[in-house]
Picture 1 (cartoon, rainbow over the protein chains, first blue to last red):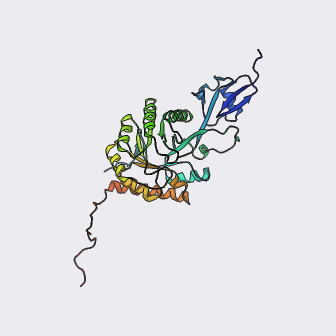
Picture 2: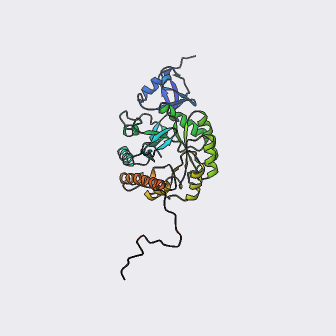
Picture 3: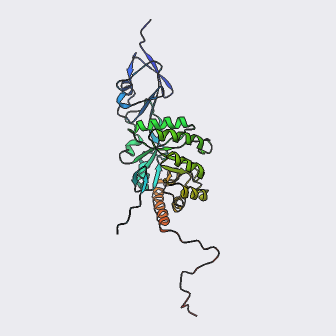
Length: 73
Length: 263
């Protein structure tokens, strides 16, 4: 069996492909230019706290929601 | 004699302003900020939405113009049609805002009227309060539902004056008054205010505050309207505290002396 050299993540409803075979949440946040932004992330329906960003590794097929605060009433 | 400060107390925290404002529908963030400043509001609502992936790094955000360390953010659940979605949204909001627990719960029942679904609202409120949230809850002007939401543990009850964004004003002052009389936590009118007099009437009825967005953002001059709303809220509150005169129906009472008229 070939070792996976890329993976797909579903981020905010869209499939995105990554060359890496694994990436941490922090790595992903950096790749998406969201480092330091006020965001919250849910992975497969569970919230990942900011302190866990560097410890949690994402896998092919993971579904992520990345949200922020916007204007609203 | 020291005069006791008239403050709005929500979930144990005191606020000087009784006007709460939304941050949606403005032309740009600059106008949002100027309007909020003119309104004097300390509590501002925000929505929780998917972040734009691939956005420019330098793109401004609401948080740059309305810094969360200067205002009390009130994340809402606008657009949620089920208790589950509302709870999920507010859990994300708490994570987003570093453990912040004060939230505005609204669960909608119909996309045309945006009328609240009180059954789902009650379910969501129960879960959120168990999880330690301080829940300010948007609801219909049904006094029984309002009491039930208070009983569950909501920290503020926020009945609509009329439909969200409609600007139709206070359609049922009688129900609002029943709610104000029966509920012990703060009652704030949320939604439906169109102009300054609507806000003043809400306060004269005895509301502890008013939450609005469209009435300011959709005015021709939002910044001037924000100032008008600030004054209306203050005037209405003072009139309520002062205690209005009793209405005399169908008979006048002259304000000038009846004696000493020239003949």
